[in-house]
Image 1: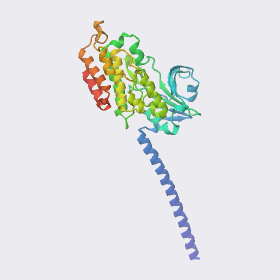
Image 2: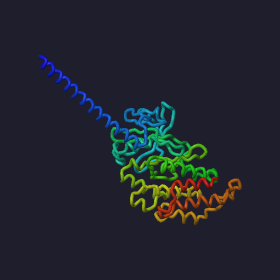
Image 3: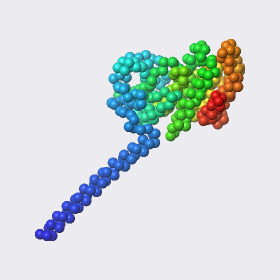
Length: 344
């Protein structure tokens, strides 16, 4: 009888030990899986707790009040089109507010599982000179909709060429130049990994109060497939941006961003659109137009007269940025330093 009790006790203990081992293994597996998720979050440089998923709408800072119904039923108008998508100005009736909706065609974008980490990263970026991403909607057929704030003052291209006297003032030219550089500096150096803008041009620089530049469209090429990215580069080249080499190699890199920044500086100083042919040389073309003319120095209006040395220094930065050799172009840290020296 005593032997039977011993056997029963051994069986009970063995069962308890087996159950304990099983539970321990389940706990370790779950902990390992959570550890992987935490590692992914750390690599993405985002905090998942800061965003909410409601249906198919991913919301970020500034878009907490958004919902799918408001976005999909918002009356709006087309304000821009490209080979890969359409831009809408939409009125959110419930909030009595205006946003910009960027529709990306499913055939032009990567698969959703390949771009969600990019969307989350772009949604975490906040800088006074960068347009924030407030929401991302994924449709049932793969449609992708990005939600941004609406800026009523338009873009830099319009500002330069609308004949407004403000665009002739040195203080405005300098403020816009250093603001764009600040946004680009954050993209290139302020994150765990650099983000290449990929499509920097005056039309993609919006204006806030006191002509504060706010750079849009950064990192958009990361959501597009290779063929759509190629079309984006070709479209930019037709407008006078991007070197032929970068178009042929489908290349977007830090150096192409610097080149395009130089082209924008030339636009600010000359008031003229970039040339759209492949042989255009911003350095040569700009010199041939006599940079220190009446428009820049303000001879026609004594109140706009500026120090010739400041203009020359900004011109030198633009020329260096547009060097035909990418290795000779300054990086964004060097550019910001030189710009600060001009203002000191």
